[in-house]
Amino acid sequence: MDGCAFESEVGLPLPGTRGRLVRWFGFCVDECGLWAARLLGERNPTIWIAGLLFLILPLLLMKRIFFNLIIFVLATASSSTQAEAPNVIFFIADDVSWNDYGCYGNDGVRTPTIDALADGGIRFTNAYLTASSCSPSRASIVTGRYPHNNGKAAELHLPIADRLPWLPEVLREEGYYTALSGKNHMKRVNPREAAPFDHIDNGRSDTKGASRGGEANWVTLTQERPRDKPFFFWFASNDAHRSWDNQWERAYGPKTRAEDVIVPPFLMDTLETREDLASYYDEITRFDFHIGQVVEELKSQGELENTLIFVLADNGRPFPRAKTRLHDSGMKTALVAHWPKGIRDPGTSSSLVSVIDLAPTIIEAVGGKVGPTFQGLSLSPIFKDHSAAPRRYAFSEHNWHDYEALGRSIRAKGFLYLVNDRPEAAWQGPADSVRSDSHKDLVAAEKTGVLNAAQKDVFLAPRPKVELYDVAKDPHQLKNLAGDPEHSKIQKQLAKLLGQWRKETGDSVPERISVDEFSRKTGERVVKGDSFRGETPGESNDASDIDRSGPR
Ligand SMILES: [Ca+2]
Image (tube, rainbow, N blue to C red; front, side):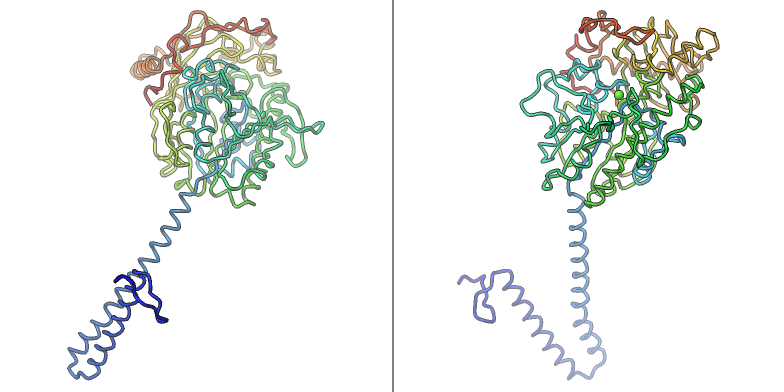
């Protein structure tokens, strides 16, 4: 045997390190015994005390080493638990304005699950979409890019440029199981051989009379997923998109009463409008209920603690002066983040957030590398300190959505500044809103001349080329401060930043832009096929190849 090996009691050679430890321990015992024997024969008290200290000190040191060792082992165990890859779920509502949840101050709408998630996580009060339009908004979230940097997907129903990686594809490379269940409103120009999610379904049940909310498979997917991988679920409800299906289960609780809704200042306070809003609230409650079912399932699996949940919407409520608008009623979203193991400082965050930040946040949270195509910023500093503010500016777009339109906005320093590149046309809302009872009530009142300024804004044409609002003082953005000498400095600053962002990200104002597909008066389709389509913003600059983010 070589010199590093020692023999055990039964004569077998011991491995090197273990053998050395045994020998060292034996040496210590022998030496201590010798010293103790000498001490017992000693009568001088000074030598007694020195001798005892000499014997005890190594024991105390060993104790300290022992405790340090325990602490080290516990810390290692805890950090390895923290490093365990989190599951991630998006719960995306369809057409819900930011302030139509209990936890955002609307007592008329019942959202106990989302309220509880907000209580235990972070409730963002300044989160903004990049488009108040379904597919451009979702495409922006999934690629972490501005709509005009996603190719044709800047406009409703058009595909995302081929070169761009989607969040679920990045997560799949990190070993995740990925599934989309519910509303799927995203596609590529040329789909890749492998679909962007491992599983895709429309969330509809075959049962007659069942909800068309798109949540039928959420719990089953949570149960039947591969258990050897972390998961990413994109659970996209059709609630609260029109039309109202009125499907209701007793488990959802009582339906909303017309007298309990909050009528925004730009709608008519009539019974028809209130009933329209009540049906909309009901769909939000149904969305909340089905999130609750998934949360219960996660709890029973012991997975809730390490699941990063985001609750948000793709755009504002499908009512006049909300959906498609650059104003908060259209562009601001509720955003709740819940992740007990990863969010160290829960609370309410007023930090400016863009939904293009979600993909980088998630990629970072799972330990992946955020690639160059992602234009957003990670929100992880806010998870550590909810007062952190990684972003200074949030940019949004208003591109064609049923009707010709082109507008851009920046939010910064508490102000909203927007530029309208098609000021001659009204911003009356999308076709589904134009067909609604709430819109019809406004039309009827317009004929009798009783509309207030906020309500008139639905029909206003031409519109101002530039709008500026002090959002804290004017939460509904009804007093345009553009041109006001007292606000000329902030207007100039924001105009410059917006111009810089448009230039650096390759935005453009096409002459031959998409035109109206629907009647502005009735909301009925007025063209055949896709003859209404034109050039999309950014197209002439190949903006889908540009990865620069502009100011952030
Ligand atoms: Ca939508």
